[in-house]
Length: 363
Figure 1 (cartoon, rainbow, N blue to C red):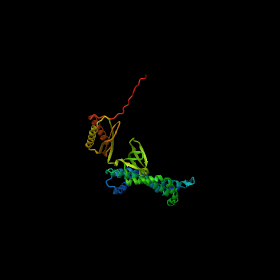
Figure 2 (figure 1 turned 135 degrees about the horizontal axis):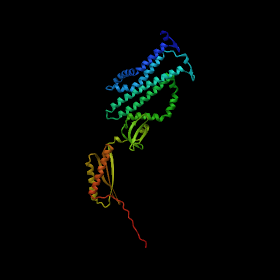
Figure 3 (figure 1 turned 30 degrees about the horizontal axis):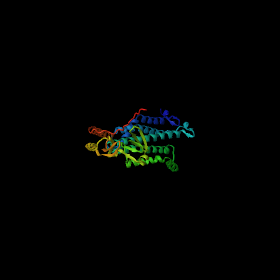
Figure 4 (figure 1 turned 90 degrees about the horizontal axis):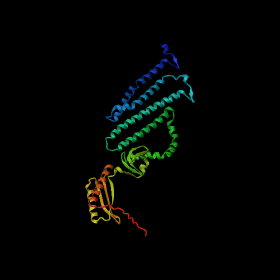
């Protein structure tokens, strides 16, 4: 038995192969339990920052990337105990097979670790978003969404740098120094994207609008659905989805319709020229009285603005306390019906353009 275990195959004894295979198989079989154990340890750290969070969603979120990370890490450590077989020492496109295997394993390890960090950021964002939903301020929600995308982008860049450093043995410091000129050129080429990124920070800290606000910028009017790193998504009244660069949201004149205190309504009445002056005066008093009786109308005016050959022009202007569009439409419709009722009650007709047709018989 000892002779069999000590038998050398491909520069390694059978005993070494069995030990390495046993370790890898053991980790493979119990990777779920090991990952849940380490996930519990990570949750203890998370719980120090966020109290009152549930453990199960966190474990379910990170257990899969943690399994892959642990399996790859243990496999790499175990295989280091073996001597790379001489028979496999050949080059592929001037690169040794040993280096190819090592680079691939390091890339997989770093990708798994990056995936793990991204999942932790997702969980943190979910917890912070749940707490932000408890406050009436929607800016907290948009900050969570913004910084979630921002930190995920940072983690992805760091993961790429780690692959260059540890997998391909690039000197990152020298690489960054050498890329300084290229970075400046890229910055000039992507100036607009950088300006949009800076504008996104201005939006979040200056808060000219938040998610859910009804805004008007340039020729676009709609509800803000998402504020991203580069652009703002707006849902228009036609239910189209418009993407506006953040730089335009900052530099353009933006009207935040959700912050207005009142909504303006305007009605233009052209009365029949045969209407008496006393009737017009009584109509104005009645309209002003009807507007004052509505609790949602704050300021109102009804006056005779012009006298023409076609009739009398009465302008009605009033401001409804800010609310939903449905409430504003309901108030405006009620006032319109009230004015129609006053016209019928006072027997006042609206001006109409008459066309006279004269028929002349020849001879």
